Length: 88
Image (cartoon, rainbow, N blue to C red; front, side, top):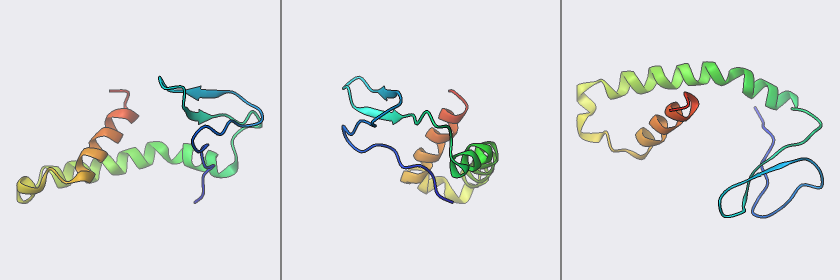
């Protein structure tokens, strides 16, 4: 599955609004032409992707055999993605 790549660095699109961070860097650009089919597919799959990640994370994290390796980079990334998706 492909998605629309975001802008790189300070590239400003020729049209459409942009979202800037506190350092005036583009973090999102919006094409006023609407989402592509790939974007729509990704958006519609988001709830399923979140549910799958939550299930995998919970099963892995709750397994006592993994208590010594809970600091792996993906664990923090997964937890952050879940929290972000839930608005926490």
